[in-house]
Length: 267
Image 1 (cartoon, rainbow, N blue to C red):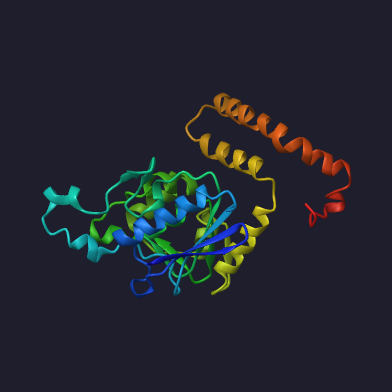
Image 2 (cartoon, one colour):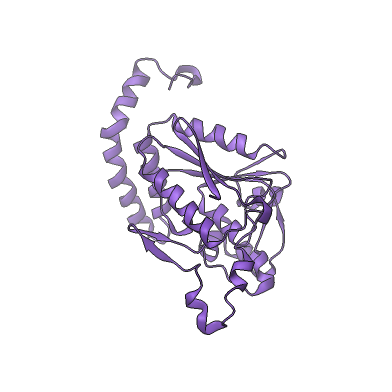
């Protein structure tokens, strides 16, 4: 097994462990990552996931040795075991979970490289914590391997079209501080602390009323491509159900004294 899960209450840390290959994804590990995140989504006790690569590298992309084994030329590309499939009603991407649309938050804890397909996996997560020595980049530009795990879709949404095209066309290295500046990550921490910070964030998120938080997540994602009026209607339609489900009870807790003077420890 190249993927294992360590559980701490409601927080699951999904660990990719092919450190001898800088956690490059081969067909086996793609399947194991996919299955781990499906299990996370389906377990009612699991609330937030952290995605971490063991051994000082988040993910160096697709294992190009596996790709190069497709020696039959372009006519045999469809036989390469990195293709998109549908398993159990969920769409599996070449890198594994990259086409999943989960209802629960995933935080990527990035050390070392998150490049090519590894960058796509980091962007698939809902948040990214990067160590100060970590970096991203469309390194596959050098080998004629395209972005097929959401890179051309998610990158412009995160950083804007101009910056996205810069990174896509040049394939240059993007260090953590630049990632933070352009919106490609949310936190930068000292070397060796990405997992700890990501898990701390995950436990904090897991404390909140979950239905409301997930509804807001879903609305934020669904608004892409919608006209303003339609997006606002969608937000209201889904949000008003959460007022009944969790909001009224939360308002009562506040009325009873919880959260006064900014003290949220008992929330």
